[in-house]
Image (cartoon, rainbow, N blue to C red; front, side):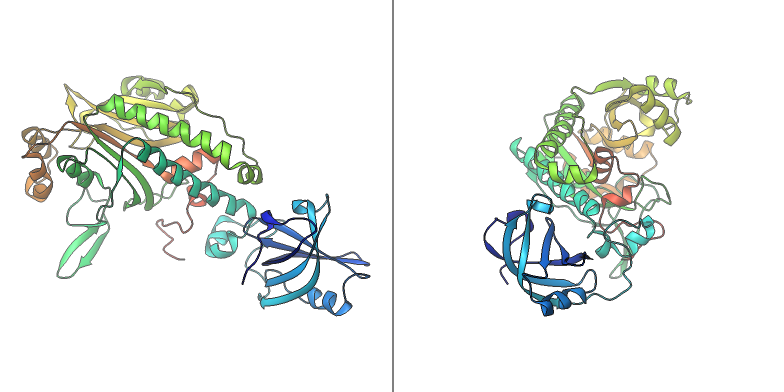
Length: 420
């Protein structure tokens, strides 16, 4: 079935269009069918003097959200969506929608987020919801293009693993034939192994899983992580890469997503680089937090209100960061990238010396034998390297000002939601 999208309609031509019945209006002498496709709304206009009465009656009987095909002639109409209207020759019902609908697709009757997520297939029909996912798709495309242009190679790492990336209990166990395995918390160990393999610069965009019992607006148990690892680069160099990526995403989304941004009522402010860098000591002083404590939500909010722009927290205490982070006296070469609302990314200069890495594992009370496959890569020529992991949903959420991270993913997974 060859159809023309709403964005490609040309006045004074005959077209075949298809989509969903968005609204039906009857003004006495003239009836309207607002037809929605992926790109927007088309106005099907049916003046009684120009359209056969049986066709008008057939349209009147359509239920909202039914799928139809329309053949007609396009005429200029400045007041109509797309600046034109279609006078129909033929309207074919392709599939009738049941009533009542799970939610109002016109948006005139707002629905709670849980209701929207329960009927996500219907929720994505709303222009504002659909706009979020147009921007998400563009964002991930921009990320990949940016990294490939900088000589990074995209890789895919296992999501079923035998051991935790960082130790701890925040793991989802699964049955793997005759033994226990886990859903991976991070591609960290595998992307470091690729440094020993000589790929030098790698990235991955893929799911990670954390069995954390959070129930907040900014946490999920399955998220998309944008991970980077680079040989012969240190923490400062990968921080520059990260801030350049963030700025580039904002620039391209502003330039290429004007229509969905307009639907959302969002005007992006391009972040200036370099981002401000503050030390962990500075951060806890602003937040009035004791030394050695991680920054909780309240502390992040206090620092964010003070800084009011993207910033890095550097020079963290070693005990707060994973075993693979390069130490520096009682601190380590780790960093977090922060938006005023929340943490977006974390990264570090990594340990590349086998003996120091083994010692760090022992100091963190992790069994070296559980990490044998990983440690072997450090015995035969591991270059210095650094990297980071960036949360795709958090980047999208903060960029668009979304109230809840669940709005930034099609089918969120949290403590209570495993369907749809």
